[in-house]
Length: 119
Image (cartoon, rainbow, N blue to C red; front, side):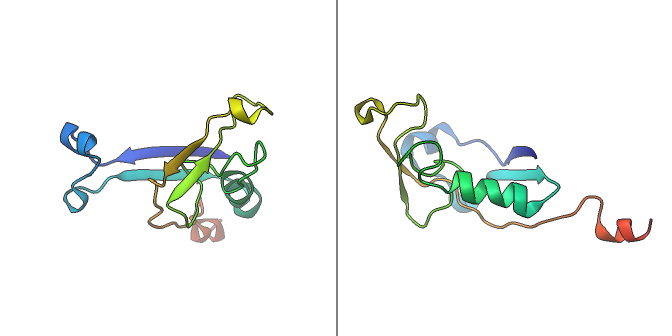
């Protein structure tokens, strides 16, 4: 699987960063995510469902991936996966607010199916 994220839109201004708000409607910002796989189900969907969205992926109760995990909750507990420690007192215990929101998604084929049919 080949994955790449590409940021688009202007960076936050110092005022936006300090206030914790952005000018929402003034700018479109985000991350274009592109992934090339040979099997959508066995590669991309597997990683998203079994790794990113699994609360126990790397360690018991470590929490879903704080950036790309998808959860209906606005606060995501993250008890850290690194360094691996069985001692709960040595793990970070964070409650991260959801800041990545998926706006849409499409599956495309490269080369396109019409191009393959023309061969």
